Length: 422
Length: 172
Image 1: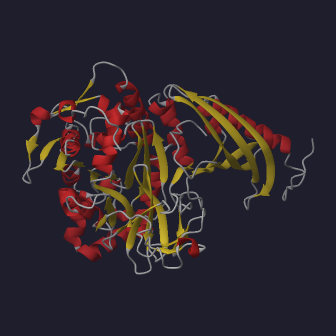
Image 2 (image 1 turned 90 degrees about the vertical axis):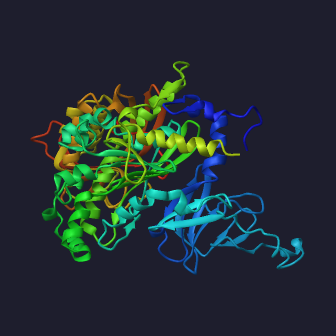
């Protein structure tokens, strides 16, 4: 895949406190990222609730790879590559639906929704029916699939770390999200908006736990709506930015919400406005634990390399080229809690996507960053913010203040490890 | 020019030319970033909807825009703040609106009309062509409104809504 040429010296391009601009602009580096990150490590693909019934399918992606995410008759999740084993045509052109088989429109080859080749017209040309049974001509499958709390990840590599090893301490943040549901599950049932940006995917990933930008990029909308989000990332905020290892990072806002001590203040509301949800949570967890969960709120965590949970929104980051990225965004829906889920959807729609009151401005920044790093000087991107006040928490993770670049440094450390492997 | 479109209620009271004039004015105010003028077109109960891939009911699934009247006001204030970065500087816009047709009336007596549009957006990042079909609900208010109507509903069904779009921070 990678064009022949002198090997890129990643160790020289990624220093502890700065990274080189060519990491965002070089198509050769992008091709190598696909090989060493996107087609090797664990990548988030979809959620089990998107294919609840046997036969359900939905198209998904890993980078430019076109995938079919299916539930077969036995109930198993499959991740198939949308490429006919005969001539490479697309076997699925619908974005979602329900079917037990995918028939290639080019020559009629027919595949079960777990990828097995079921038949091919005029079999005499292949030596008769069943002659291809041992030819390994099913649809290609993601070699490894793993699920955590309903989030389905795939690795395009036969071997490597397990999903649990990859997720590390980001796993508990996904669990923390599901605990907000009175049924202990989240659902991805609200559909997606898809927002393209002319920017390298890493600018988007880095921004997700950059607490330095909100008060500037989103300051106007915070003022207009009376939002206190800006304060959460201010210099006086008790919230912290944490590097979770494996390239994952979070803005841990719990210290700020615990200081406020009000259930559902994290969502800008209170229990009396969501009585059904609040009572369901108290029934499930008991008063003490329910209050704690509703005070601490939802995580703000970037799971390397492509899953970002922003409290009420789920972002799936899809790199297309070195300077083109699509964000697929949906609202978190809490199973068993229609009242809060409805509000989450309305708030998410207002915030994200091409016209989002927040995300359109973020995308503008991504695109200006991308245009900026095409400039010749000063060559480097500075990542030192907060290094002097960084400390190690009880779990051994580096933490900084709410608006420090601790998460960005953790991202680059892991990126460098992956890219310097053979 | 004749109006061969059916108009179910208030026959004779709704003039296609008035509907056309309203829609053309709405397009011009949006093109020219006349945010206050555009906001004044809205009724107090309003829905401004730009569906995404799934198109069922406004606000029932992820949408590009699903604003009620309150959020329209918020959107306008953000644009007026000068710190809506995705529109600073504002896009240069030129839309052509055509195929205007009166569809009938809503259950509340508002005129339902549809129109197609093609819009070229130019900004430093490059130009983009937008196109789609719009549905309007227009409440006849000839006495209080210079534009004859208050807009209670506008939806924009973009031809490419099933795929990814760049930012749409201007008024579409």
